[in-house]
Image (cartoon, rainbow, N blue to C red):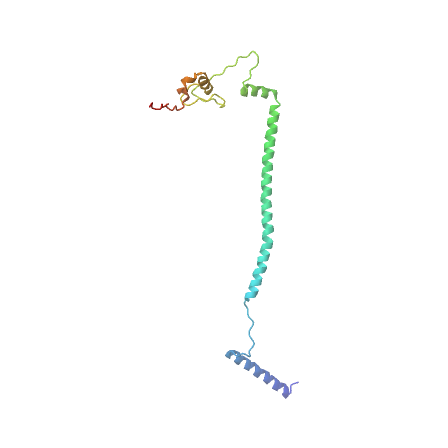
Amino acid sequence: MHGPDSRARGTQAAAQRAAARTSSKRGSITSKAAPRTGWSTRQTFILALVVGALVLTFVMPLRTYFSQWSEARQIVAEQEHLRAEVAALRAEQELQDDPAYIKEQARERLRYVFPGETPYRVQFFDEQNQDGTGDQLLPGSRDPWYTQLWREMSVQRDEGPQREMNMPIAPIEQAPAE
């Protein structure tokens, strides 16, 4: 195996390697190109398409998940509000089943009295009624609106509207006689 032929082959191989080294330094066309380490445009484009498809695949279900989660939270909050409202209505219903409460409300809101009692109602013109159901006065007058209305209806037609109503009255102009 170690004969003269093997030595000649080894020398030839070494000469070819040396020639390849010198020709690669000169930039000859016969040399093999070194493999590139970067990405080609085509590979980058394909990678971008794959990443885009994956993002679109995951984004839509995530968006749906979060919108449904938000809607579920709103429904739970609405249920809690409705439960509180139902509890308040049940408490009011229980209160209205009490005869003492019904009598109190009839006296207060409807101004009912028992037979034999004398009702009194005190009115002050300087203050508004506390419950807001009192007579409303027009500005500048001391009489309630219905008294002023009654006066207007009882006035003769030729007398015209009264000044107490605080309504502007346009002067009646007569056409010049020719």
